[in-house]
Length: 283
Image (cartoon, rainbow, N blue to C red; front, top):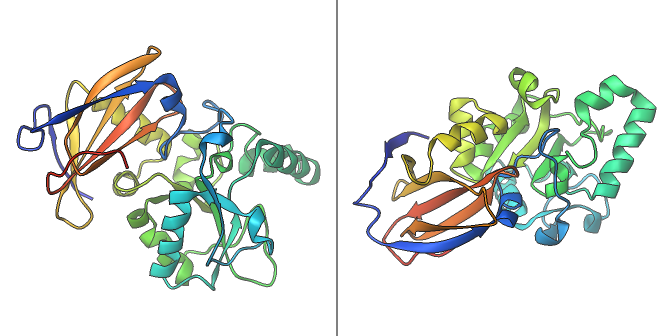
């Protein structure tokens, strides 16, 4: 993932602009929301389009209890197909409600103690699983550890890990980032953030906390970042919009489509997909 340029005025791309309105509620939705001990989840489950697992292998035999956000599930299914892993990699955990996260946290605390729980289980309200965008995966074995499933750096699991960024996923908690995330290394835990954000993070070795800080450099009224589209036939523009008030109106450069994601703190990240110059629409 090569960053092509950082430009303030890209007239060759920005031939037409659309005006959109962002509100404070937009900060708390989208594929890039940062959920951790500092920025807790706002329990807006009604805003998540959750879908039950289909055409994948799951740890829980009741498919209806295993759900993920719609786009996350679609891309996860495509990723498993790409590495021919549908039968070898199990979906161990997906979306959890606040009640489910509370039960898991209290049970783990009781059975494994405070140190283990603090390292591997987020407190209720600070778990990515509550967004529907996080998934725990494990290699199919006779016994599956629900908290720490086996996911080695070899075979089909390594293929999954190597292809993950192309499908919008990052390994959320790496050993080298423990001081930032405050979570121990979890090679089984993947988070959907969407492409090209996943590829940029992978290339720069940034965790989500770092990416959210870096992207603020590309302010709506200053330089934006431009990267090449996955198929090489277009350009993707990324920038940050702070939302200090109840409502902000901004111009969106024309492109094939655009997406808006809040950071769960103070603003939104705009991603514009430039291709053949068709009318811009929200994806």
